[in-house]
Length: 288
Length: 170
Image (cartoon, rainbow over all chains, first blue to last red; front, side):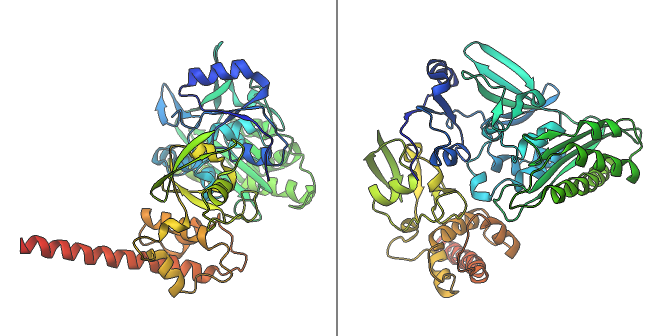
């Protein structure tokens, strides 16, 4: 399959990339790992006149600073999968990274690219919703930080302006005892999720301080199960409370029937994964 | 666009359209047809090559992105008239049936062994989970990769012993 013709740019700095983007605006697409963009270009679902390759601009560090974890937009899924820091302190991310696509795709695909692609079946969006992360957006006009819940607007649609580049993802550092996980059902490695759920719990004196629940592939975008989260805030972490959260999350999801399963089946899996994932999150939080 | 890629150790240049995929650059411009195009949708891994030592799917990268970088194809495994240990092991363990997935399997396997010389069966299966064998001949592929790891370790030991002998002799 051959994409439409385009002009290829490989800027040497972020500033140069932003300048090119300001010049070409919505005629241009930013190329990072290319693992989503190139397939859609090959299918000619996207046919940008200009491709701005930012993949050699660094921006791939994974570090804690100023109360948050800062992840460069060009951090590869592979880097996140192998990060000891994530394994030690960010269990939701550590659980999700090795479940993204397949090991070869993870060598190129980036966290920033995945979030900007905004596929409702993408994994990082749900993880970031559960963790209340934010994204840093840069343009020639300046920089702004935005909660992920505002950034992800709809299927393949984000709040990114045509002249902006997502440069960093910021995840609040875990406070007190917290834990989490990412549960994903897929037909085979590399397939899109049938259903997946990101679960985060933080405890305060044994009760739930905050629960974060993000859902994958069961709506027009990654969903935040806000009602289920609210039902858990301040509650005792009991089986009954988790069952109620599962019920509410399933109610909030709106999956469609397709080759991966019926809507009814997927909604049931949301219920099961939310309950099961919360139990795992609780175990990890108590051990933390 | 003029690009230069180090392919299997030698610089190769080409003047290509930016939309040309790396798989086609390798096959059509460089004439290295060991890199296969299977699904053309980032699923099967038949087009796997190493980019700076890491497996990537060459149907999902543009040729221009490889400019100034190093690519290893299956042809690059064969060196100084010798099969690479992984090639010898695929032959010995019957690690191929139709052979279509084999270049990708061997490159992914060689990258795994470079990081982890004695992988468990699970680790091998995990590493090759982005490569699909349409003959479903996974048993022997896994065995071949593990056997190649043992052969490489034995070679390294022999080389160490020889170095040690030399240092004693001098």
